[in-house]
Structure formats: C-alpha cells, structure tokens
Length: 131
Image (tube, rainbow, N blue to C red; front, side, top):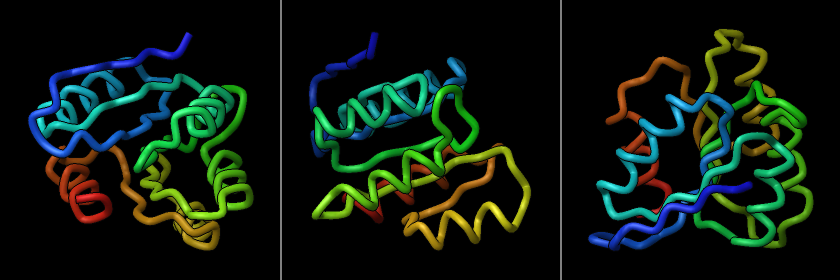
C-alpha cells in the first residue's frame, strides 16, 4: 500500500513523490521535507512510483535508481515519454559511476545527487526546482 503523509501545510503545500525502497532514507527525507511545508507521497518501488505519479500528479519526484520491480531509470524514462508537461525529477543514488549520471541527464533528469548527501543539498535542489 502507498503511504500518504498529510501534515499541516506550513509552507508551500507542494506535493513531492518520494520513490525509494530504503525505509531509513524515506523517513529521513520525509521528515525534512514536511518540516519545510511540503506534502510527501511515498512509493517503495518503481511500479508503485509510476502509479502514484499518474494518480497524484505531484510537483516533483525524488527517485532512487536501484529499486525492486522497476529501476529509477525506467521510471524516469516512462515519466518523460508519457507526460505532456514534464514533471521535475531529482535522482538520488549510491552509485558512483559517471555513466549512470550521463544516462540520467540524457533522459532529462533535473538534478542528480549521490548518496550519502547533506540534507541541505537535497532541500536546496527541491527549493530551486519547485519553490
């Protein structure tokens, strides 16, 4: 089941879909984003992420690359191919390879952040992309 987190909207109220299979990372990012007033939707794998993106139409997707069922690359590819208005996407990954970054950029990712990262780095990117 998809988890939905509805906090009082102190700030923007913009909706962010977080797609990652690591419970600790999900929780850490969710808390940081909600503290800034964002509404956070959570998907635990790529297929669930696509279903939620289609149904909820979030302002931004934060997407892990290595996930069960469908990788972040396949999710990004499908989001880019099927949406008339491109959705903003930040990819996060523990992968060090430059090839992965180049491929993500070719697919049109808005930002690419390597784990581990400072939460400020992610929050700055979110702020820059959706305000």
